[in-house]
Image 1 (cartoon, rainbow, N blue to C red):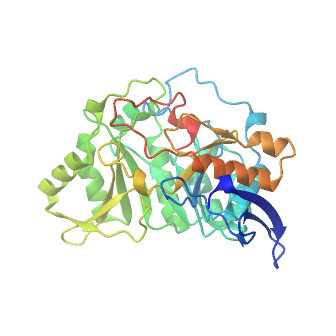
Image 2 (image 1 turned 135 degrees about the horizontal axis):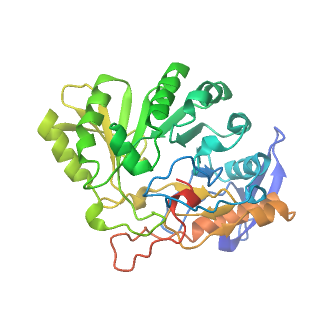
Length: 361
C-alpha cells in the first residue's frame, strides 16, 4: 500500500492526541502510515534546522564574507516546528536532531527543546553545534531535556581550527565542551570534517583525546556542500586513509557492531579497549541504502536527502490554513520521491545550489 492508492484521514485517539491515518481504498481498514520510500527505507529521523545563521565561517559550509541570511519572519516559529514534529510522530517519526547554521544563535532554543520533549512518541532529541555558545547554554539545554549532543570541531590545533573556520573561537569551543561535560552530557561526541592537505596532523591528537577522555570522535569525509563550489575529490581525506594512520600508531582497530543499523558512522575501538572513534565515509562508502533521515530547513522546506535538488514547501501549508492531513501528505509525498542515493560517485552528480549552512547539517 502506498500514498497513491490511499486517503489520509485525521482523528483523535483515546488519549486525545490527534493522529493521521491512511485509509486503504480497497480494504477501508485504518493503518498507521510510515514514511517509506520506493526502496523500502523507513524514515523515523527528522533533522530540523532552526536557523541559517552561524557565528563561524567554515570553508566547507559557508562563504567567508557577505553572507545573506534569511529574514527572521521567514524562519519557522517554535510553534510551527512543534506542529510539524507532532504531525510527524503520527507517521512514525520518533527522533529529532536540531541543527543550523548554528542552532545556539537562535534565541531561547532550550524552550524549543522543552516543547519537543513533551511530544508523545518522541524518544530522542539531539543537537549538533559548533560549541562556541555552548558554555553559556549547556546546562539550560540539559535541564530542558536534551540528552544527546554532537559538537563540530575539526582541529585540536588552534591555528588549523582558524584556517577551517576563518574565526578565532577555539578557546570558546573548548570551554563549551567542558561546560557540556559538567552539565552531564556523556559521552561527548565530536564531529571532525577531514580534509586532505589540512587536517592529517589532527588525526592522532583526536585519537589521543578519545583514548584519554569520554570523548567519541567521528571523522567525516569532506563532502561537496561548500558555498563556493570548490570541492574537489582529491581533497577528501578518506576514511581508509585515516584508519591506516590510526592503526600505524595504535595497532589494529576493532569494529564495533552498531546497535542502530541506520547510524551513519562505522565505529571502532582501539585494541587495548581504551577509546572509541567513528568514520562517516559519505563519499567513499555511502550509506544511502540504510538512510532513515530527512530534513526540515529553517524556512520550512522538506528535503528527503542532503543532496536533493527538490524541496517540498511546508511553511505555505502552516501559514495558509493547511490541515494536519495536508502536512502529513506533504511528508509522505516527499519521502515517496526520494532517490536511491546521492550519486556523488556518479558522473551525473550535480552539487546542490544550497550549501550546508542553508540546508541544515
